[in-house]
Image (cartoon, rainbow, N blue to C red; front, side):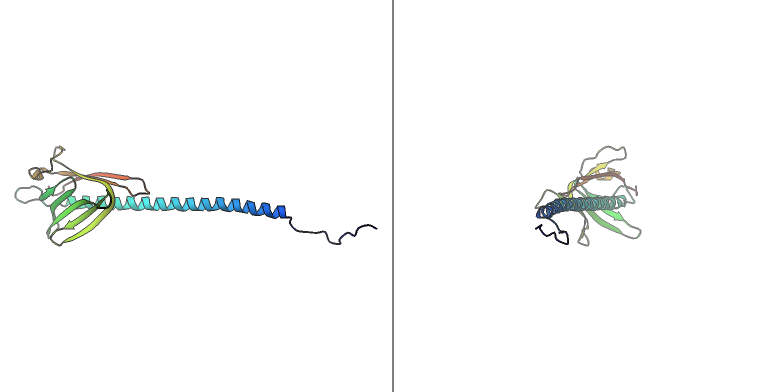
Length: 187
């Protein structure tokens, strides 16, 4: 007698085929997860870098605008600066109707070596944060001949230009360095 042939050929997957499919899916999913996580990390770093750049530019533009508006004494034709150091500048700002004392300063944070930039008005007691994560900040003062002036009260009347040098660096992003030269416009 001959063995009986099944009327339907058997269909299905063998254990080896199923194992290979599971292994291949595991490899593909691990590669996919790595690609997605790398993409997420890159996007986060770019967004943080763009935010730092934007913040640094805002701080620089605001400081430059404030410095341009330094008032000039109508009798002596000299800028009304009360303090000028590498990290602080106090002056009288001239608006259309008012004069106001303004201070630009960089204060070092107690917990880390970075600076926070402030714009304040001592009379009103208000201080606004212009920028954070500044790893370097300096103000340099120049006379009309572009000679560097010492940071003392005798040189305040000679100030015609102020150079702002700002470096912003947050832990995950690349350092951003901005430098601008501001001419006092009221002189």
